[in-house]
Amino acid sequence: MKHPTFTSIGDYVDKFGLTMVEVKNSRYGFVNQKGDIVVPPVYKYIEWNCDSPFISIDCYDDNTGEYTQHIYSIKIPNIHFVEKQGMIAVEDNSFKRLSGFDYDWLDYETGCAKRDGEYGTIDAKGIFRVKKELQGFRAQGKDLGFNPVIVKDGKVGIIDNKLNFTLPAKYDSIQRVAYNSPQVIVKIQGRYGVATPGVNAGSAIVLYDKITPVYHLVNRHPDEAESDDTHFYVEGGNGEIKTENYQIHATYEWNNWTDELFCFKAEKAGKVFYLDVNGTKILDKKEVEDEINLNKVFEPYETQHRAEYQGDLYSEIRSLIMARKKAKNSHGRVYVKFIINKDGTISDETIETGADKELEQEAIRIVKQLKKWNPATIGNKKVRSYETVRLDFYSISK
Image (cartoon, rainbow, N blue to C red; front, side, top):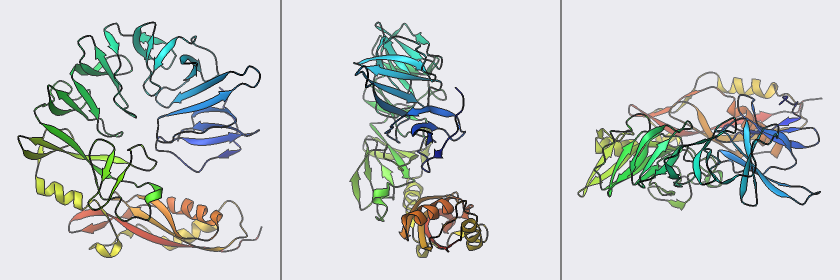
């Protein structure tokens, strides 16, 4: 497909690196961060769930009255799926039909599919590759990022896109613990363990009565930006976010939530253990609890050493303001608050005090261009902290 000329590129990049683009005649599509076209810009209207690794577009033909859905998966490039009346076909991204409406079940994230009573996966060329011993796929939840399967004895394993087992089919259940973590919790005869597909797939230690993932909550949902209690830490694998003194019900797929796996909490015979991310090494309980406590976001005055910018902060802000591409006749002062993470990057930029909406958007854009910071510390440990910067916009003649 010939690469089109975009009339506009969206400012928002979702957690999968996708950005909406527009071409002439108000047609929309998506590109990734490399500039590759993921969804061809031919659609009049797109509404997508920015927390899913696929985009579903409703289409209606005024001439035929036919209603279809076009589904694009970031994990299966070059092709997309078309669903009509419960049956699914495959097309390439030039809209050449690669199959009839032959599939009666298909997982759009992984390409796992069922056709004529057979199970397999659809590759990037639209070819259906069958694995004869499969009896079906067991849905394990959203955004898994792997292919769980059921074999003839009813046990569950994991296969890759080439239908090779990366986790042997010997488990009663498999639970993914975080979207950006490869580890899974496995269960055999009521006992739990941790496995990493393709790494310790055949050697998981399955002997605990219960295993619960413990997360770092890296980002917050914008709706909760004003609360100081929603970003402490996450514990639990059932979609419930818990903090020390605040509790909300949400799912890990919310926009701007990042569930970074920290360790595992394991229980056996009434005793509690903390395991590393591979589920093998037992960690010191006090060190784990101290680390969890230090994962909250601190105000600058709560830290021993405040975060420092790697450069001349306000000189760089002034330069970025003066280098704006479009001349503005508006002026005003905007304060932007954000989090400085332990690696010195910033996130969760919000307007604390604003001017007009255009300047507020420009202020966020400029803050995102700033270099890294030296993170704040407490004792010898790096911690996340808040900072606020001021941006002064002056009128610029056209």
